Image 1: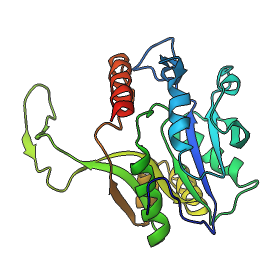
Image 2: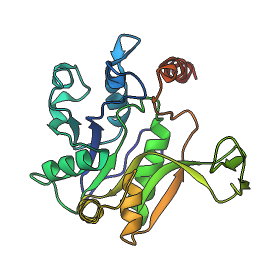
Image 3: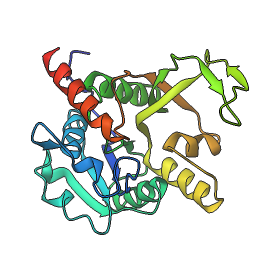
Length: 240
């Protein structure tokens, strides 16, 4: 496939961006998705990247007191939808899935992507989309764990070294069939299963989830120092 040449979809492709979290590790007062990088908010950069794909639309799950998201000049603004987020990430994603089902099909594909991952590359997005649609599977972007891992049950003592040879670090987007993902998240929430990402809900219900190798520069802005790193990455990507 030539760069930026997309396959023709029989099913539609949607994106969900959960953006209702408080992000307390970043700041007690400021939301990380609205910090500026080169005169654009982190959220705008994230939406720009996702819209490199042939999306039929995207849903932002935002907080009740959010008075910023709907005022931003988001890319393909005519395709933007907004819904109320929930207490946890899974609640926000489920609200967005239910919102989508007003006009989307259960057989459509949906990508769930962190609002604070503005550096995801278009080739990685295309690789994930192509893998899912070609093989009819669920998949996530992920990278093999590079560093030696230590298990520390009682700080500061190392209990043992963990074998990293089969370990991957999950990223987003995470891509699945809309209806299946909705049912898996509903079941996990109903049974109070701790799910930290969409893949964990799918896995719990016995669904197979593949990994598509991503890049280490697809960072999530979690701490305040990550903002400067994201700024450097975006500038480097523009020059490459």
